[in-house]
Amino acid sequence: MRAERLQVLRGLLCALVIGIAAQAATGAAHAGVDSETAERFVERLWPEAKARGVSRETFERAFDDFKPDPSLGTLNAKQPEFEKPVGTYIAERVTLSRIETGRRKAAENARLMQSIEARFGVDANVVLAIWGMESAYGASKGNRNVIRSLATLAMTDTRRATFWRRELVSALVLVEERGMAPEALVGSWAGAVGHTQFIPSTYARFAVDFDRDGQRDLSGSIADALASTANYLAKSGWSRGLPWGFEVKLPARFDFSWSTPGRTRTLAEWITDGVTPGPAMGNVGLGTPLQLVMPVGAAGPAFLVTQNFKAILRYNQSIAYALSVGHLADRLGGAGAFQTAWPTEPPLSRTEREELQRLLAARGHRLGDPDGVLGADSRAAIRAAQRALRMPDDGHASAALLNRLRTVRHSSL
Image 1 (cartoon, one colour):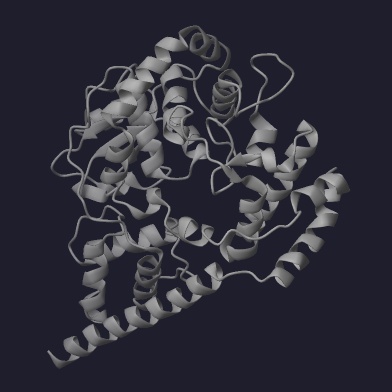
Image 2 (spheres, helix red, strand yellow):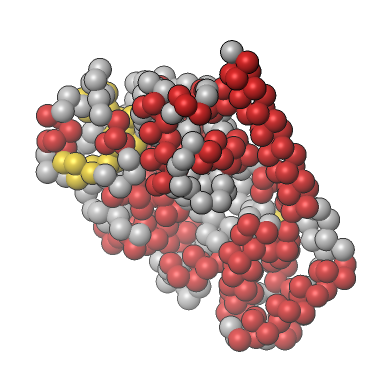
């Protein structure tokens, strides 16, 4: 008993130390940037922008009286698709109001949507759903200066500094190519632009001039924005005629290893193993390869998804986001709500995921440095720990698992 109490205390102390370290790192990342640091950043950016064809005039105007945006640290750290319970996130986005507005927009733009679907092969309701998710059908496109936002993030977000710097230069190139004033490029706090919120590099690669007015205008042209979204999905692997996926019911005894990311089986094989498709299955052939997705583990809804789900994930690397888009698209087409209730437990924070990785590593699993990113090795370690603890081995990083690992003895695993 004494040994068990000591182990509990060690676990709590570990969690406290990790929490303090994370708070310190977060504070450093979100601290204000002094004017001298900002000036040096801009000076060092110029050669890169020049090499991409940005004129000195455009560059100087873009950074005239530049001051970092102090509000972005909190916004960047608290993205709802990663902070909220999946069910809560979906419920807040797939609302009756958004469904009704989407159906009205579909009717208003019926000919446009038919033309886009015919050309790109992407389900019109999915394109409409992304429009609804990203800007509430154009009502909320964002009004922040994109260059200011991206420059701030490139200086303060040490985890993704390279990504933000690349997008910043792409934004300058976009301004140069369109001949627009840098201050006129406005969008979200993360630098996304237009009706369907393209980041600058995506704008450059996938935007199309669908209304043929000589401009690829994702803010002022609904046709360009929605066609560009369809083009993006099509080039991300969208398969014409397939749905994104559908909810399923799993049998009482199920091999949860089949929920490992990347593993697929045909619909016929899933059905043979007792998986029951829900009413929103759509037109899916028995030979279609499908992957099982369990966003909150065995306690919540399960889905079989096609390659089109992966295409939506290219738009936003969040399972909650992709499910919201797919579900909103289904509701726009007349489908009902999900059948299985969502648990309300919030996802583990990055600090908690890092702690989980440390606890797994302490029990002999080789995971590398804890970074809070649960890749294939972390998921395999989670499944092994769940089996040892006689929990459903669904690979889900839950608070219940973390608490068990904090308290069990090393010899138990």
